[in-house]
Length: 300
Ligand code: PEP
Ligand code: MN
Image 1 (cartoon, rainbow, N blue to C red):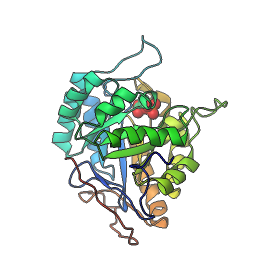
Image 2: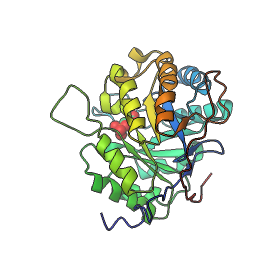
Image 3: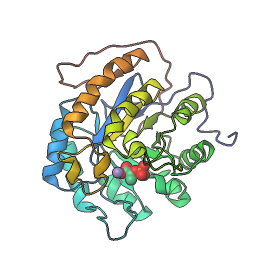
């Protein structure tokens, strides 16, 4: 991995922090949870999600509007109308929004509405797309490819960094295995290794790793215990009715329970959870340790 000269740590405590907004910073002591449905399905759905998540320690909203679907006959996403809904939620609830880009032509509309651009697993080695998001001024959430090695993952991040965008967050979302019991296998060894090798923040997506909602909370806890800087989790007002990834979606109530249950795990590894504006009564501000951070320029 010697060639990943921009992604690798220059010293043991080298850690990049990336701002999605003034309050939401990924890579610091405070864990960042991004929550929302797999797909934006409509205004009503997103209002229910944003209202519920803005009241708990979920810092940012997710929702796909350009969807990579296995079948061309499946719902492909709401496109621009979905982006407008995400922007309305950002405006109304003050939460930054994250959405997936699948093609270079989608970069411009997405950047006009979203705070962070997701490169999905299926595009982790779409090198032209990586080069193109290297030239934007929004942070990029880069998900690990379905069968990508850690080295390939880091080199994909290196593409974005080398093309001029320093704001890259890595996301482990499970890798393919022989066993259909879980949709993918969450590679926590990779999370630990990525935190040791690179200075980039690392999030974990337990939803796409598990593929089953009942496995998501404990995988989320394990990810925090392993040193992840936060989580991206799928949830929905009526999970069984999700138009995509229904089996893995948490209810909004389950999401709230999960966040509360993460607090002691976070504390045990010297982290806290939530954002400064959090209004949850069960929420405690604690500052742990003195982890050195080297802030890099932020883009928003
Ligand atoms: C998603 O976030 O909905 C998604 C499609 O993720 P992944 O690229 O990890 O499969
Ligand atoms: Mn999904």
